[in-house]
Length: 103
Image (tube, rainbow, N blue to C red; front, side, top):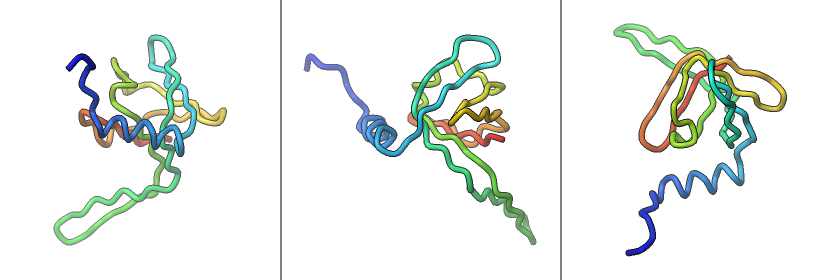
């Protein structure tokens, strides 16, 4: 087979980002900014369950394709619609997507 292997999950995610994502610029604490498309969710409920109780907060998240953010610096920021959102925490990072809590 002459063509390189394409991950179908990443290919599908790119199509979804093109159709439904927003333009963003990721700026690491040091280095050059990267333009990409992301899913920006402004009303996500994060919940932590304990033995006898649970706690939840409403927050904002940014979801992107992991390979678009090679050399990731978790002290960076995303610029979306002329508003800068600082990274608070890395929520999930697997081989295909990465999710940050931002403020």
